[in-house]
Amino acid sequence: MNKQNIIKPRKLSGFMELDPKDQLVFDNMIDKVKQIYLRHGFLPLDTPVLELSEILLAKSGGEIDKEVYRFNKGDTDICMRYDLTVPLARFVAMHSETLHYPFKRYQVGKVYRGERAQKGRFREFVQCDADIIGNGELSLVADAECLKMVDEVFEALNLQIINQISNRNILFGYIEGLGYGKCTKQILTILDKINKIGKDNAREELAKLDVKEKDIESLLQIIDKKGNFDEILSEIEDISQNSTFLNGIKELKEVYAYLKAMQIDENKIELNLSIIRGQDYYTGTVFEAVIPNHREFGTVCGGGRYDNLASYFSEKKFPGVGLSIGFTRLFDLLLQNNMLEDIPATNIALQIIPLGNTLLECLTLQEYFSKQIICDVAYEERSFKAKMKDAGKQEIPFVLIVGENEVVSKQYSLKNMATSEQFSLSKEECLQKIIATLNTK
Image (cartoon, rainbow, N blue to C red; front, side):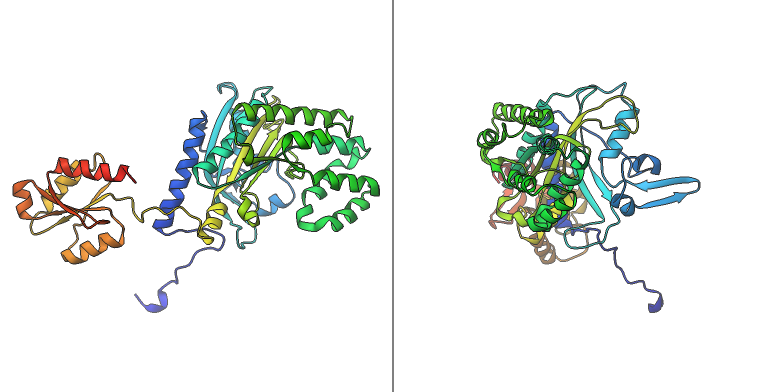
């Protein structure tokens, strides 16, 4: 081919692509998350990447509309999903009569947002979501279960987190009680971004909404409160008699009681009244998990309670609570900071290396070993030394050397690549030794 016709290989910015070794780590971590979800009785769901635009954009607006990948195929207006929540809402509305409630589902899948690619922000990323959906009503036990699951997920990933928990009704009701009911959402939006804009800018923006100076200071004091549940609740439970505020206090106390019954480690949770979660659909419990030793990472998991999941698709009420982990972003942060779990560069447990004219015997042996372990045959035409060196580079734990004498005697040379020990064993004994060694790691 003419060199001028060679296309330079490159990929779109904002799309993660890992080498096989890192992909093994990524997949291993995803598997751990799935196992926690399954252990709590959640069922897997895999909705399409493409949705009708009228469905996917039903609950969007503002910046999200600008970020959606949207195109037409013939007369069909199509979008690529930008999260996993709207597809869940559509699914629940379509299958509401056949689902069992509370409906617990988890979904791990890629979502797409056409935002400006930058460090820590991706246009294609994997989300790990879990939601519990009720039919008409849903116990606050579901909120506690999601919080407990966050704790277990990050424990499985060997990451120390603190889950910051609040209830939107507390601030919502307090603002209403001060007499600012008409601009409650605007005030919450300002308070939600205070870490980005700072308190002085927040004061200016609140003043523009005609919030009195003394009320601004009281709001800033409230969102500064974080720590032990009992202590913070005792400080704030009498500061307002607004019914929404009092309901938020009541719900938070109930969720906390369930968490204690579930024996959650109280060092991994804190009441933090600055947690608001900007999305309007959150109506009660809200939470955000952070890694205390790396708060610069920001939120690594978030979620909360919403009153009506499928309001755009059904007249029925489907309250729910859920959590979401932006897994691609989390993995990238861990990768860049050398915080990933150290696992072997390959999933192969045994490589069989033929010596002389023994390839057919090696393939037969592969069938035997592959029933219980991952086994590979080095069948390419290369020297024995090169094959051994390659097995070492791949970090394959065991090599089985099969020469013509081994074929006759049925005693094979098994080498432990980590210790350099070599044994002459039957295939059954080889398998037992490999399994026993791998199980001790």
